[in-house]
Length: 205
Length: 257
Image (cartoon, rainbow over all chains, first blue to last red; front, side, top):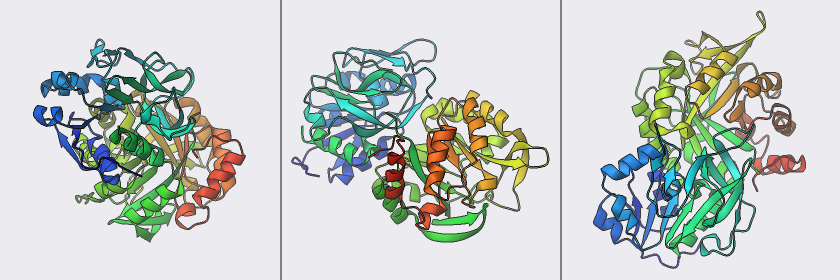
């Protein structure tokens, strides 16, 4: 693994969700120094920002709003990557909610929907193959058919902002991209060498 | 295509990995972190750590090893044993575990499953079930406190009913431990797993009985389980994981490279 920009200031947004330490540890394994913060100024001044998340969309958005992080995240212009639920929070809305749809951050157009997998099991849990769409620096050196680790029951359909796709009963977005915002539905921090490569690519953007 | 998972299970007691036969006579296999690292490097798809003493005695168990594992391991892992409350689960997840597995405490209070689901989401809630085939009444029955022989007891649940109940309450995955087969390496309980598979709409992991490579291909092909868990065959080097994965690939089973 080669990190070209080791002196960067990488911040993991403390969304109040549970996979924060595994994202932090994965970056530390790449010898990147990283801090976890919910301070608006620290997040705004970061070179790269991670938006982690597990759990439910409504609980995570409630936590982000309670911490008054919504406008801060929406105003970021440096590269930002959302992981798993963090990716789902980046689009306009999610069907996952207590009574109604959850309004998300609106960084990328789109809607998160309950996966339609027929007789297959949900959650979609385990290692599945990912196919990048076109040439993106985020997937540099990661060929089509590479396995990543997924755990989710909701997903974004394949559409114009899909950066990589996966198939489980139907095709869905494994990764999204618009402007400076990236999102991955899988867990790079738990996807072995392939996940480390993707994290390295993001840090090197 | 979604790959079938190979899952080494590390039974933990006092910070060491141990293994017994039919849940008994535990011997020390080695230190947790180096063993976990070794399995991850060999291509294990996931790891499960069962703190086998935790549910069956009352003391507070040191779980600091969870964050040490999270620092070095780049594959998902689940922690089981001694998780009795939502707060217990929260601490384990904060230390970096991807999933928590509940067994005896969920039998004592099934509402624990509902609470874990509502607080942390379905994706991290695993329910472990210790199921024993009673030859006399020809029924699969659920047992509790199997980590301690002196406290192991039959519950009022038939396995199929408990499998349905835990799904209704929000389990995201079920590990079915077939006690008759545990540690004796005669193959997974295909008949039972097939029966449970039909009822189980969440991922199902087979546990108990792996002794040969063919046992893995049989359980994937015949019982359609999502993953196969094993301990002694990996700890004792009977089946090297890379060799097992090659074997399964040759049998046209979807396996991660």
